[in-house]
Amino acid sequence: MIKLLHLAEYNQIESSLSKLADGDFRVNNDGAAVKERSTMMPILKRTIRSLKSLVRVVDHSSRELHIKMEDTSDKSAMISEQVEGVTSTIRDIAVGMQDASEHVSDIAEEMNRIHHFLQEVKGKNGSIVDSSEGLSEAVSLGKREMSSAMEQMRYISGESVQVQERMKRLGKVIEKIADITRLIEEISSQTQLLALNANIEAARAGEQGKGFAVVAKEITKLAVQTKQGTLGIQELIGTVTQSADVLGASINKIDVTIGTGVHTLETAVDKYKKVEMFLVQIVGEMREVDGRLEGITGSTLSITDSVNQTSAMIQQVAAGSEEVLASVEIQQQNLLEINENIQESALKSLSLRSSVSQFRLPSGHDSHPLQIEMNRWIECAMAIRAVMVSMIESRELEKIKAWHRKKETNEAHLEVCFTTISAKVKTEKDRHYFEALCAAWKEFGDIKDQNAKWMLEGEYDNAKQSLITRGRICFKKTMDLVTEWMEEG
Image (cartoon, rainbow, N blue to C red):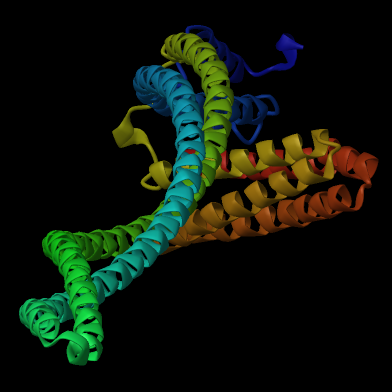
């Protein structure tokens, strides 16, 4: 077959393949003179363009990937440190919440004891109030009885004064009776003396004086009897006077005693009044205390309920913090694994860059003016192709919908690339390639959208078959067009 090739074409192919073997993709277009007669050179150039485009994309992607992997590695390490700090903090919080739960439980028990103690105090205070009210009533009754006794004592004192006055009058009457008795006694003595004289005279008169003697005898007898009666009266008057004196002295003592008793009763009544006022004040204050105890008891009950609720909440939070701690520890372990994977990926990105660095691409001044924009377009297009491949490999509807949303996001980014490229197209040739690219992408887009529709409808086999046949061919055609544009433009 080589014999059939033109020598110049053979030399050019050999030179190009030699450069490719050395990793040099800086292949020029020196074969234009043999292009018309060549059949192999266009195929070789198209292959080189595809490889060059692929290497350029891989080189650009590997550079960005390495930068992002380094940044991600740094951020991952920082996140790992932060997660470790968060884990330690949550662990401390979990321990603190457990301690707080125990303390709140102790407080709840203490509040329950205080509540029961206050209820007992309230009950005892109520009993004291009832007893104090009973005592107050008894004191009030005692005060009334003492007041009544004091009035009776005053009445007795008044009566004793009247008795003393009567005794004085009785003494005066007795004195008068004594005077009269003495007078009668004197009269009796004179009468007796007169009767004696009459008897003497009657004796002198003889018979004529017998009747007078009888009268004188009777008068003498009467005078003796009168004298004896006056003596009895005097004895009685003495006895009565003595009794009256004793009675007067007793009445005086009674009066003094009554005065002392009245003073004592007045003092007692005053003290009863003070005690009654004190008890009334005490009962009022104890009733106020009882009301406050009622409020405090209700408050302690509410506080106890609140503390119990708080304890339950703290226990729930403690349990939740334990779960969060367990979850964070798992996430921390996952982050450590992710960090290790990132480190490995960073090393692999370095390996990829090292591999790509073995190839030499044309320098920047030899590149197409739109090379940077087209590289961005290629990245977006390949991202869409990768999303479609992942979508068609999925069988869960939710995942398919998620990939479909990512597809729409990347399509929006690609539209921005189209707009940017369109604004920077200057030459007619570039305009021709741009229009061809738009047409090729539209053809691929129709196939892509149909595949997405089939996936959402569950027609997985149709979508997969279209992906690996028509979709692959159209996408490759579009990529070849971009490569040709960048090489020939």
